[in-house]
Image 1: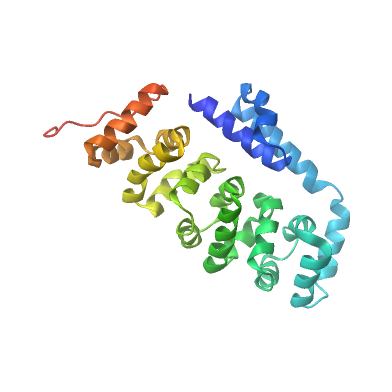
Image 2: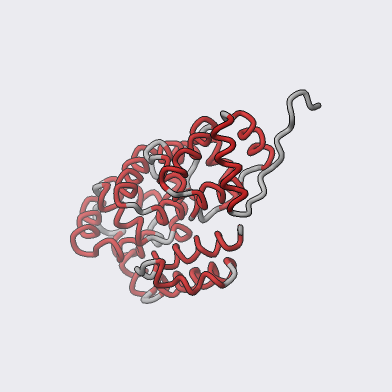
Length: 259
């Protein structure tokens, strides 16, 4: 089941990149998630490397202009897509200064179009409060795929600010399409055990059990076992029943008094 879920997540991310509905690309879900990720990265590279020479000349020319003027041109002349293409070619400190002159809704537009791999230094330098503003706008738009792509490029302070801005259902949806799966446990540390325990109620209410179980399957198994042991019996039974129905093997909970 884990591979099927990962393929589903990759289809969602590819659909967002191509501006399609996931259902339109559902047939790709039969492919391995690794193959889908390679395809998505190849498409991203093709989009970002087109007209590379022209974009580099624009980035170089922008160094001659005041920061405020570059921000205004980005917003009113270039637009979000071109600004996203250029951002990774700018000096990171200058790019952050330019972003400071732009409104959060336009920065959210840029985030949707951005390949975080190409602007990782810029993202890492963004103030936590500005990241929180952008996250708030992305959540309002339902841009879980976009938020999932950025988690691996945020420091803990910025990530904590970002997580505080999203509701529990959005947290589940974002974790499902997380680009950097190695950061799931770090994300869980910032979220806190009490909030993770509440996700079972959210999954039941919102029909997000695949997302919730995928999260549990990618957390440290000892951590999951301890979390299940601390749950109220009714909530734990709900999680265990859903896991059985969907073929997910949860870690065994140590019995009381066990060494």
